[in-house]
Length: 510
Image (tube, rainbow, N blue to C red; front, side, top):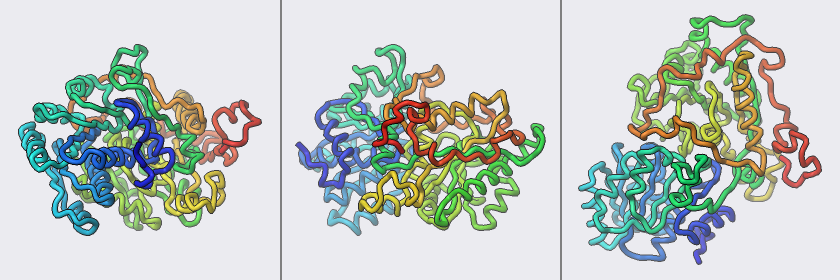
């Protein structure tokens, strides 16, 4: 039996890793911000230390940017624990390893940990053979789009462990088909939300033959109670106009809504904490309008940072008027996110929903309605603990329930007030926020027909003409909805307690 505590695992991470150790396949459900990547790195490190010599490990992810981050974290985890290995990226992104080389040279005695990047099955085969000849473990990081190249290049060499991050993407038909061709001794699926079909024999994650059982589940409410993420709190905003805006006026006032929301959001923060607001956009038009908006330019001129990211060539990776590489964009985003004195607004469509670690975000503005899985993933971007709060909780100076003593007690869910005809969208987002607080919350979602895509393309999911347009979201002031802030006592209750259930239960109330 392994001792995962030696890696600095929390108790719940030890339990998740042990369940992986005790099962040849299965699903691990953990909320964003609770250390799924850390657990995956420990699983690989533990297997390498138990089985010296040549072995193959594969870590799959839906996006190039996330694959970069997984490589970075696993590489540094291994170096810290004196584990040497070879590394290979299988996707179309260019590998930049200068920082990893520097980290290795400063933190280990290893002369060289080979890192390569390719989309060629021939290069995959050559790299596997080199690792085999050197009797070294090989860790391969791939996107779901490119993972089939590993199967084509591995020849007769077995894959020992496959770890699939954000595994709900595998319900897409092409990814599912490709993965079925990849033979492995052990395979595991990590996600914050499972996607399921009515039939247990379909593409959904309730297909036990394909995915295995759910071997470990932590709900967001459990993570909040353990002090690993912060609880959600709703803030509803509207424009300050006294009339319904025309379509032309709506386009001109998107910047006004964003800056108005940011300013009102910032007023709710404590101890001089600067606002860092994520925007879940309704499509590319939102980004393009905001990039040139006068109010956004004013925000930049007074020291704020405005980030946008998309696959569209007019946006790409954008920060304060400059286009840079995605790798540079993510690095700069993490630096500014870690700076408590830096104001930030970050807009994306879907690229930042899964896996990407952005420290410091304080709230998310929803410009579109989201289904459960996307909502949970998006909320997870802002649910991370403030670093000072984390230290106080881990040192047992405060408890997770002492919100009045926390620097960042809440992750703000910011929702534009909506028209009467769109009340269902508002209700959906508020209801999902409530559910996150409940211990019996089921982090699973039924698959919709548009979930079953063929998986073509990398990140090709930025609609230019969105179904759920911002035109349906910005409106005149509505009585009781202008900058309505959910009361603190409500924000600290579980879902069932809000509905009059379990009112005598106090042990787990938030």
